[in-house]
Length: 467
Image (cartoon, rainbow, N blue to C red):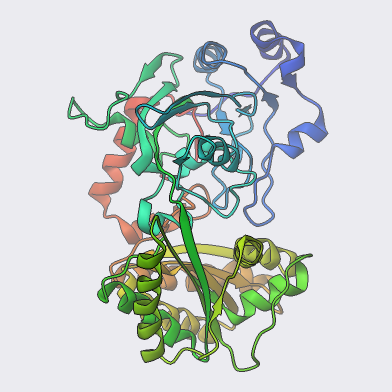
């Protein structure tokens, strides 16, 4: 189906639903909502809407369905796969006014929250009650809970506590038809029918628009210890990762940073500071958390024994206070921004079983040598999630546009051959869609298309994404 354009009559009807103050057609507003953090792509909608409740979203979808107009849900625009880009123009549906934490349920360790709440704000509010919401993407200071739900976001502490889907109990969702449904129940166990909640999480706004979520919370860990460990070989650093788990320790975070990633962050991000040994090729940032100091120290002893076997630098940095911990995490969380500041780039969000991480890194570097590109790698090593930033540098436009997609396909083929898949937490969206045939066969892709058709038979909700 071909989506229709937004005309003056439609704008008038939208204003009658939302009021003039929530409808935007000015060019600068459209351009602002026409991009996320995916490369330099720009796909502005024809109108930006800012509804305030589920009923307004429902009325918008009823109109869009009747007129066959594309609707793209838009969160904080921090995504890295193009999921919030309005490929077919139409309506850009900003969820930023859905910014309320409705209820923190201390008795049941749950929170009811709207999708426009910033992730870090939610974490800090529940922490005041001694509770913990663990998923923490690098953009947690600006990204929305709704975007985390749409992409099934992870972050460093997904290693121990799980990704977004592991915290979702129930969702309020507006369907493309304008109907409002609830997908689950506010209970820890639910074996009642198909799991619509988990189908929605990670669906990237292609099946429905999330207007409220009930999330599980955990007791807040009282203590954490953080160490920074350097290696003269990036491969040795990667090999140490699986060995830590085989030694019987599960860190709360285990992050890998290649030398170039650290150098660029120090160079391009203000307030980022670190002294590096000239021979350092990679670092692991390792955190353990819990409630007993003695147990955490014993875990660190086990971890360090493993690291020494894998040729780590003898000078291990122990973060002595919260300020030093924050400084180390600041560098790790700003790597993506630093890479973007330095060069045109493409970021691939590969994930493999963690034992295969050294083979993935070696393979990526070998592919880079064949195609002539530089890559800067970092990521959540503990769960095998490697972010591969491919730098344009001196590549010609022809190399970038014609040859590089072949190289990316080889990277994904390698990833899948190692037991991995295309995306660990950034989603498929627009930019990874051409490679879905590597991870899924024709029957599996047909099933996904069929699910899309059941929920969105007119293909108006975030069309052109995933499949």
